[in-house]
Picture 1 (cartoon, rainbow, N blue to C red):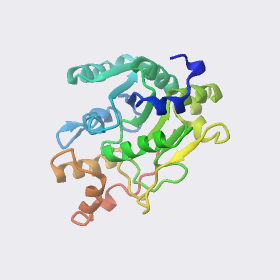
Picture 2: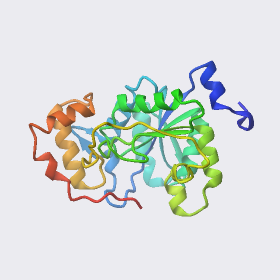
Picture 3: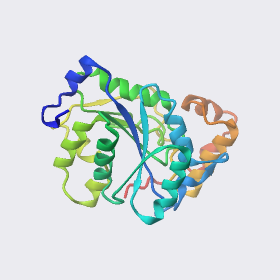
Picture 4: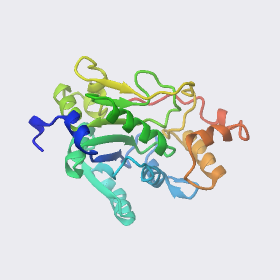
Length: 258
């Protein structure tokens, strides 16, 4: 399809688009190196992320978008062993990595997920995609912008490939704009139609992402409590009643944004 004449609203009227979840992952994390292969209840964190995304009814394909650096060859080999689609691109220009992975995988709708979210919820992902497709002319939907109400670690963004192409045109070459893939979308609300999927209750104080060893201790405790990886985020909320100490495991961690 010619991108110059591509109209997402027409696509919505004729057929379901190709929805691809692209998971950014690398071994060179500065605060917690190799965290994506850190085991959670016996299996690597990345396996939790990919496995849970594969349960989404709206996602046709999951792609792990890693880097072309030599240190990430181990990650690529692991993905190939598991039979997962993998794309290698720039380490620091993550925006370009997403653009290239989307073109390679023929994604029409991109679901952006980071590999440090092992408790990503398939139902929530589907809800975000459904909201994007239901809103005529909508460019972008997330469950954390403009206000976070879900626990950190359930972050999901859905947008059209054409939306990301337009965002790239608005982004300068500063590391901030190239490392944070969708920054140009929600920082330019005049240029994009933005939607949101939010919660009636505010659970934003809970932190289920993995940026440090302390974060890992919490999600590993959650994984071991359930003994499986197919539980919902609401089940985790309920489990806090039996595990009140979870609230103190990583409550001192500040979110790393650089």
